[in-house]
Length: 188
Image (cartoon, rainbow, N blue to C red):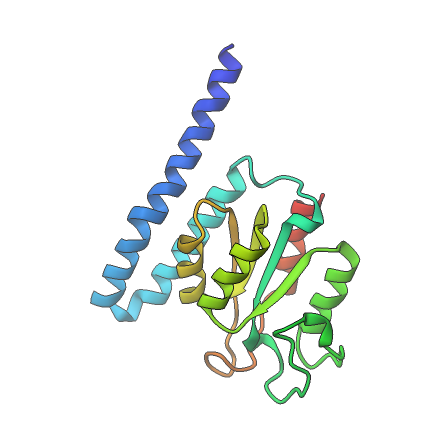
């Protein structure tokens, strides 16, 4: 009986922490981001980092069937001059290797996960509501990740910030090894 009660208490604490992060932490982040715009991206990074830590410590971060794991990517990771649009289906990719989409396609085929590319936050939320996954791994800029994580709460989301060597929304990239590691844990 004590073990079950301890489990329930720990589970409740984890739920409460994510709830506080979403309903208290996110509004505070927005507030302080407006007052101190120079540190807004740092605050967003900390929010994502804390969210990932809380999700990984919860019972949700365990093996999931591939058809219930949703990988959500931004359209800006596609090479800007590419003629093959991937927003309808990522499998339109010609796998030329100029961006990381080809690696993601190979990984998606290997594990059978749901992969979609969104052009913005509104489309991303619509995809989540249509697909109804058990777990989301999302790659995006810090602003989109923080908004998205709070928008789909209580659904568990692991956020992977993208890298922007050419500035925002153009030829962005991300750490593929981090993505592989997170998905391997989720897929067992």
